[in-house]
Each structure stands twice: as C-alpha cells, then as structure tokens.
Image 1: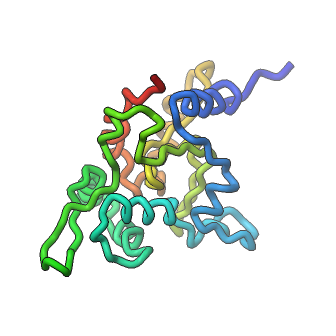
Image 2: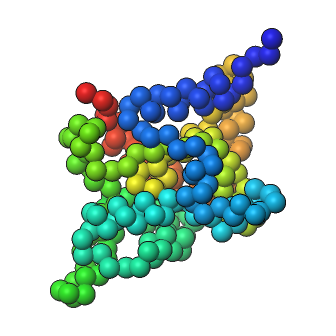
Image 3: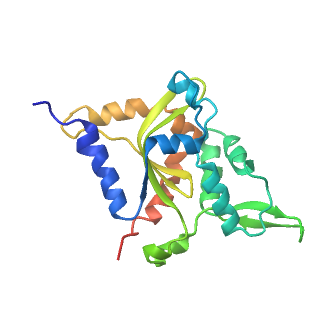
Length: 210
C-alpha cells in the first residue's frame, strides 16, 4: 500500500483546519477564474500570463466599502501593487498598505485620506459580524515572465494574498531544505512581498469561532 502523499497528510489538513476557524475554501478552478486566467492557454504559463495575484473584484469592493470617498477606477489599486519594487523597499510599501497607512486623494476636500484595506476591528467581533473576507485556496500558480511556481496553500484577506504555506511531509528528512531551495527563486514571494505581510496574519491568529 503506497504511503500517503503530502496533499493528504499535510495540505488537506491545513485546508480543513482553516475552514474550521472561519476561512472560506476557494477551489483552484474558481480561484483561477477570479484571478483572470486565460482558459484558452495551452500551458499553465500561458493561462497565467496576464493573471492577477489578487481577487480583483473582491479587493475593489472592499476598498469601496471601507473608504466611501475612494473614487479611483477599478484596477487602479492592482496596477499600483504591480508597480511596487520586488525588493526590500517594495516589501515596506506593501506592508504600509496592509497596515492601512496608504493614502488616496479626496478631491472634494483637496486632501489625502488613509486607505483602509483590512478592518482590524474583526479581532473584537464574533465571526458572524466579520467585515473582512477570509479565503484560502490551493495550488496557486504564478508566472512572472521568467519563472513559474505553484504554491501549495495561500490565505487571502479581502482578495489580498497574505500567507503562503509550503506543505512538506514530515517523514522526509530533506523537507525543510527542499522547501528553502524551492522558494529561493520564487516569483510569487518576490512579486507580492509576502514575507513582510505575515505580520498581518499574526494579528488574526486569535480569530476563532466562539
């Protein structure tokens, strides 16, 4: 009898636990549709070529809900994220957004306002009153034009990827080293600056069903 693989022993359990504490599971096909994959592409690279890293519609709707004076066109925020540098300064700028310290211009009063992406007030609310959308998906494929990668599990808040989980079978002695090698040239981590955004997830570690 073959030994159970990483998906059954690790990945599936993470998805199960996430749903138990209130995260909504998004199947891979649905996640790719929401990210704008090209269904006519012959290869994963072709399907993901113009895909977003975000759930654009959800991100835009949440920004509008949290920022009533926001008037930018749909797609402006994602465009701004794509223009972030893929090194430490981009990490800093992305973290600024996740801390709700980004700015947008309100023409009616000719001044800048803080741009809210995540309502941290959920920490004090019961799950039925949460204002953020907590979603988790698997097999999250990204291609940056040179390299492609498929992340095992990705957690998103309001359509923004905030945590990547690389699943490795604990019975494999080389699992940690292998995981580090795989992520050393990871286009997903370099483009989204997720290593910095882990602090956002830590802020939500206490979210549980009452």
